[in-house]
Length: 111
Image (tube, rainbow, N blue to C red; front, side, top):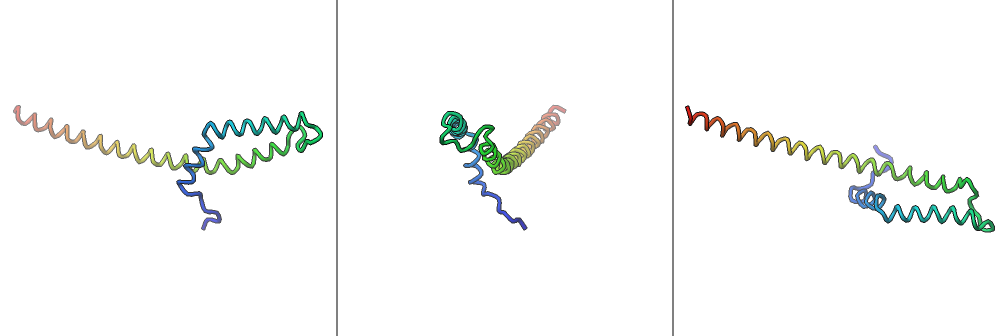
């Protein structure tokens, strides 16, 4: 029995698409740059002094929650790819069987 239910497939797809998109990467970059700049250049309002332990902690937590979702989505894609390759292999075998039958028919006509 699972203590925590895995995110649904639709949620995972939206989440992965958002996390891998340029908007998120740009927003994360701006946020980190703003965080560091604020704490370096506004000493009177500093809330995370260098070496930015709080920033490191927040980024680690974000990664810890993101990676399992990415792994689940990657596994789902790998299973879909495997199923697609199995279907392709079945179709190729069927085409080869039909071609062999046609070749056998052509050979019996020539004999």
